[in-house]
Length: 245
Figure: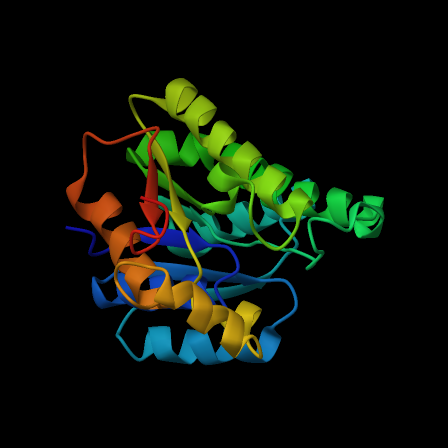
């Protein structure tokens, strides 16, 4: 169903982005692997993607930079001749205790909003015409933090709430040609939680499923939205193992 299509995945070097790139590559989807800092990991992801028999484009760009995003989209279409899928996975945070109001610096707010909100919008806007042409699909990776107000910082939670709102707005204006949804994971076993084993175990114990999510858990939901949910748009799909039932 997805074979031969082209996906642009931001933040695809590690974690959910990497797992999604591999999941889609298994279905015959060609991938633009975007990264901003993790070049070595991005190259490793590219090797794994191409080993599955599809083509890939490795592209360094900060999604907060609108001009860089537009160029990335242009070069993706030039390389593959089309673009069908956008996965906005790139994200950033600074860990600041919610009680530490003075510790939440303006620069943390600015960067969270620039990447997690404006970055999503930049990518959606730059791909809009081509996705309309291809009857494509957008999935924004948000977070349950955007629903609960919890998470790594108040700024991060606010940025994810804003990204959920942007998703709903874009679903209205890009329909009926393009479906726009978001996926909100709970805690995912990625490098963001490395060294926080006690914290992760405590959260896992409070979840009905008895564990936190793997990147592959999230990528399977993304795949399902792309391949099997043709009448779903403007929705926020929670992937938290029932943590916040």
